[in-house]
Length: 125
Image (cartoon, rainbow, N blue to C red; front, side, top):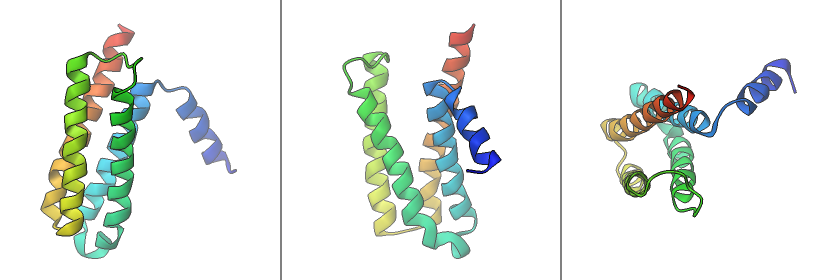
């Protein structure tokens, strides 16, 4: 393991759950945006990045269904609804790939990431 990998692991281990989720959402949104912006060159990466995004949303959806989930029921329902939308949109994009179809997934990820990072900031106050 090189020094940058070691540093990254130490940095991640010090983050709260909401911040980790926020960063993961931003990372996948960035990957989707890179494909959208460079469609002809990077379209071949679409399936891999959509799969990462789908797995991330599956983890979020699963967490919302846990008995010890600290989120209010309304937020849990909303996240589950968003996850279903993300899954359906992913299938649609895979069936008929078009760069503009990525916009909604990018926006959802960025907005949820913003909410997660904002909620963590509120907890620290």
